[in-house]
Amino acid sequence: MNYKLIISIARSLLLARWKQTLVAAIGVTFSITMFITLLSFMTGLNDLLDGLILNRSPHVRLYNEIKPNKIQPINFSKDYINYHNFIHSIKSTNSREEIYNNGSIMEALKNDNRVLGFAPKLTAQVFFNEGSININGLINGVDIIAESELFFFNDYLISGKELDLKNVSNSIVLGKGLAEKLLANVGDVIQITTSQGEIFPLKVVGLFQSGLQEIDKLQSYASIGTTQKILGKSKNHITDIQIKLKDITQAPAIAKEYAQLFQTDAEDIQTASSQFETGSSVRTIISYSVGITLLVVAGFGIYNILNMMIYEKMDSIAILKATGFSGKDVNMIFLVIALSIGFFGGFGGLFFGFILSSVIDQIPFNTAALPTITTYPINYNPVFYIIGSFFSLVTTYLAGWFPARKASKVDPVIIIRGK
Image 1 (cartoon, rainbow, N blue to C red):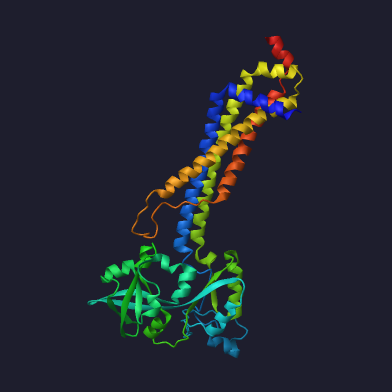
Image 2: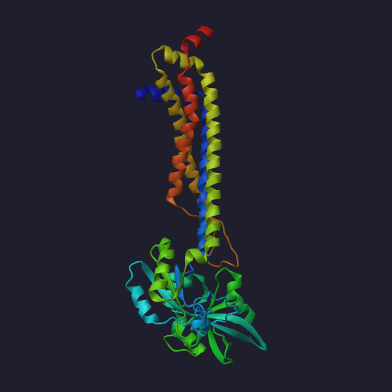
């Protein structure tokens, strides 16, 4: 088989009907362009939404949940030891929310190679005083350095400096919605009332905006030391340990392991954010489905054009066969035509897909809910371009295989006799 000659004949057939060839190539180019643009935009949007939730969430959370005691007095009675006891309206016990031996636990986490990092946390429910009105709120006591490194705290800080939370005593960072309710700004001093009725003054050193308004109207941040003072607790009082893992997929198994090892409750991110992850998966599936549908439609266009080309080139096919070309050679010629359309159309689609994605990436996207986002999100993942190239060649090959097979079976005697 003379491949050089086959390629030369395929090129002649392509150029002989260059308008049809151009239409087929444009169909592939458009499909790949929209495939790349759609996936880049939808994945960028998913990453943005993931950042709002998953970046601010620990992969594994250790805590002590307040719950009823499983062992009740009736279980100690010898009279009912062989009975199955049904007990209703059990009240929660006086168990502490504090994580026992939290120092030893954090030391063990430091030596665990699966752990990327961890951040201790303490939560206090308080009332923010605005004149005679008390606004319900939550103060998260955090290690601000660990919080910034693991949970990107500084990316959501719209005013002030995160280190002031550590360096300025009795300081607080307010959620933007909460600050608007209190009419407070950086440098102001606000007052809170604890659940024990004590009044505590705090200096505002920053404003925080997560993008979720309900959270920003409720939550605020202070150092662990300040929160411990507000609650009147000792310096080793910690209610949560937030853990980031090197591999997020290991979170469910590691959560179960830590729950048994440290005798605490443990929650993994897959359980905590299951509904959100489902939404991201559905959006990704829709994006791939639409993109592949575009490629299939382009494939049908190529199939129709090659079919028409075969009917118009019956004389040429008959002459090729009469001069010694086999059915396999003719089949190869039309496959080369189809793959050429797929290659050049796909290359153009990758190029224009990147250009269109870059244009979208520059379009301003300004919203009060997301102050750190200035343009529409785009993900330039090379995998999308590899998938687009693969599908463009596969689709055009399949679109060309059936017409090529038909051309290879043409009987030159019948065509020449008919003429």
